[in-house]
Length: 591
Image (cartoon, rainbow, N blue to C red; front, side, top):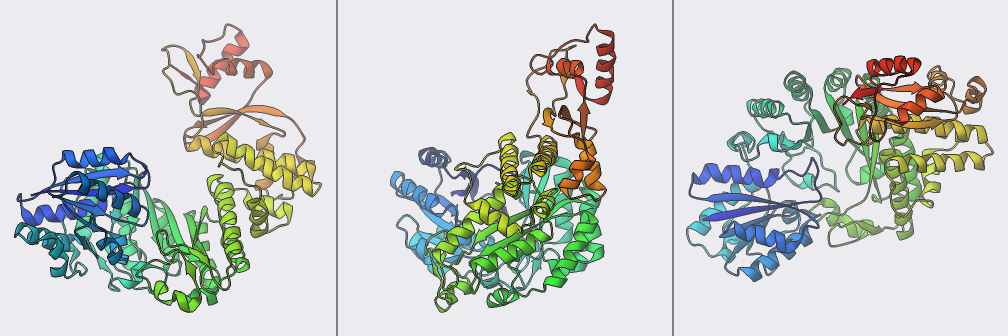
């Protein structure tokens, strides 16, 4: 029997890894020992459906399994319809989070023969055995009893068995545990097992060693309660630091379990933490069975801040009992703690959650098809939802994508407004299409210039532009988003540092930053301390950090002459000396 397991990701990214289907394939390989040929098929939303169908049929499957989530439900069901039309005898089943949450809607689809809700590794083995024994596909589901995998140690690793060779992926999903002891009404995890089951430490160690050896750059840790059991979390962090300190880890954590020692251990690895704040209103959170203590939360986040750990928050707008102003207050609280990013989502009333059962009692009007988002509630009108969506987009574009965290508080303090006021006003001025790169930096400068000029703070507007330029271009260079033409270089010719760009400033940025670092944060005062001195400099990455070069007109002209085709060592004595120094400092490189 030939089986093809199908994944469909949102888009190509470091997270687009077919871990779920690979876990099934690994367990099937262990259970059937050569009596079943299992292959994986990996697609993305927006791919041509005919191409996807052709690729699946080229594998000549007898059975096809679909891994269904909120984002790919409609696309995969359309794919199933096409597969059945092309090959009517094909057996199709569906599993995944969307099937677990709302099995009946997918089970009734004419192209689907049966569904496998719940954790799939054991139930898929039972289903395939029934098919091999001659059970009719339509009767398979009736004979199955979905239940969580009791002992995760029985499941083979798709990484260690070779199904997912780590070297093929720049990033990987890494599952550490299953189950959640918390009971948040909006989360599907709350209806699963409340017992936290963990994969064996020896397996995790072997996987991490294989990731490090393969040169994996990013790991997205799948563990909804990573730091719930503090001793285990600290043991894992020490293992990460020991075996794979170069890997970047993205980890979800609960703020209430962070202590000083744990903050230090997070600081010992290259990581970014995601923390589910959701709301800063204890009464709102209590309605969905979450607890919140603002003072305790703040103290624990400050431990991360003092340790130099990168962290971000999640916010949800439209929770039962919340209001637009309440959401804005939560935004102010969140940004007051200076997160690296703030991810904001509308409430989704997911099938199978307790919130779906209590939605009528709360008066929630929501979409009953994916993505299940709230339309309105007694306290959050449809207009309020639209306003919150605009604020969320403004925050994402200006703060997250614009990497505004180093200077955002400085600007708001000088404008004397709150984050909520800033993003509420900005929501009505958003461009039709999100700018990126240099265009995003330009847009941020224009937004701030307009804000300062509306308060008749003309000097502050110019200073703000310089600050945004320094941090914006520096960050983009460090992330590899800006730089010189990466084309081929002729041996023996001189070229600009590939990670460099020319930037114009109204004042010397190093003198400007020096005053800010000294604690002078009133931009009007800074303007009196740093003379206006328009200049054009070269920002460049050297030895892991960004440096700035300010040059004479002759030096600047010569450097610019290297931009396209490179150049040779100048014959002029002074320029030749500058050339030698520029080579030593990493301003220019030899082809």
